[in-house]
Image (cartoon, rainbow, N blue to C red; front, side, top):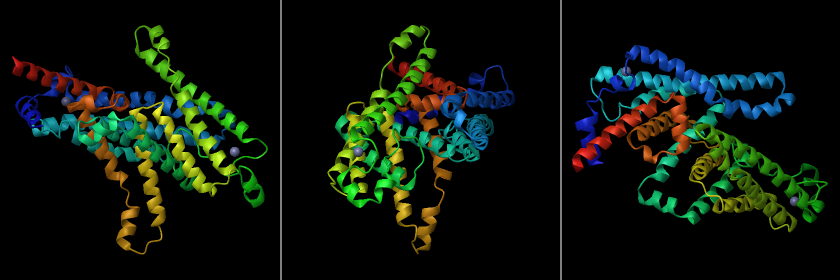
Length: 401
Ligand SMILES: [Zn+2]
Ligand SMILES: [Zn+2]
């Protein structure tokens, strides 16, 4: 780090990146362009995330619901584009006002202040945006060189245990508190018709009526297999679109999500049905054990990005449980702490940190995090990162000689 500070003070602090990154354009022209292109880029980038999943549901959607979805899409696009465009404006403004670069004015502070515009985004899309940004931060932590990160990232067994714990918290949180945010499956709920019939529910599994446990399991696995297959196809198409030889991209098609979804659901439902049938414990405890067992699927299909996402949702579930537990507290200070809107500050910090790491040490950023930052800023942040990395490389090369 001391070495990096020396390189920064001697070589990066005096670089006028305005002259290099937006060559031929004044800062004012560049700011106007960045507002226009960031808006277009985010509107395009959010179509697959927010509008495509709605297309199959259009025939059953009401006019009001459709209007709501379109407003969510527009507010999310405008919010995200302003985060990036204001960040770009501040990069130029800070460079002009301060006359030189400081470590945290190059990217961290512009991204931090720009990120406050995220509060224009409506719920529940806001929560999804937060989750992806926090996932990026956990991803960076897991890729770092410290002892904790190295221990976790080098051991599949430790990752599986963490994933099992997170899976328990997430499915429990979703079932009990209706927690938002995408997860691999939706939790099983007891069938209310049989719920009242205590004698019957003791003899049979109370998750479904009129079909056997085997049929219930098969229906779920089939449903999640096709959902995962759709995701695999979309990801293969996206990868192929980025390659020059499209055929090579299609040949690399891998059935990852289809297998992951079906195995996760298979383990979860089979354990839940089995424990309910043998009447091992109350349904709530059986559900918790089944959610934990489902996490075992991570061992066969590991992915650091998914683990980071599970950690974020796991913390969210824990926080919901804590809030629910302390909801009736009489302590005034605890009440304020529980109801404080932490995301107001945490999101800008996460945004500033991710952008700063991407510019200074891009090897610690995940491909998903890099993709989101580039799409939102219309590749502006990639240009600064490339410039900084090129200078660092040149300096190290000179020092070797
Ligand atoms: Zn500029
Ligand atoms: Zn069953």
